[in-house]
Amino acid sequence: HRTKGLTAMQKLWGPQDVADYLGVPIGTVYQWRSRGTGPVGKRIGKHVRYRPEDVEAWFDSQPEGVI
Image (tube, rainbow, N blue to C red; front, side, top):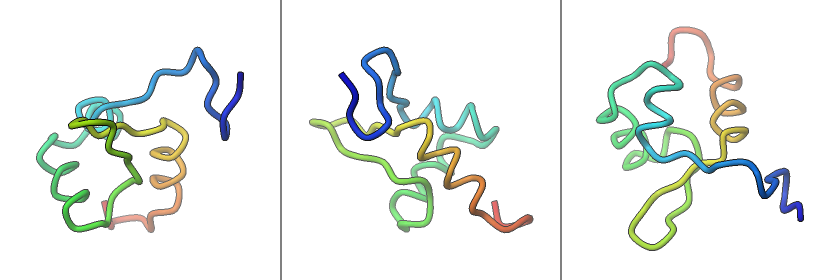
């Protein structure tokens, strides 16, 4: 079963996973989310989850020195 690039075996990332991947403090991920400037995440219940490929695409789209 495949949904928009996400396979059943892929795990969605939480904010800590995003912070670890990008090498930034988790507070930075929360600031980006509140400002609407970071990678796209979706709320699932009370949790925010990110697709790894969306985080990678967001990272690749950022000009050098912005992050």
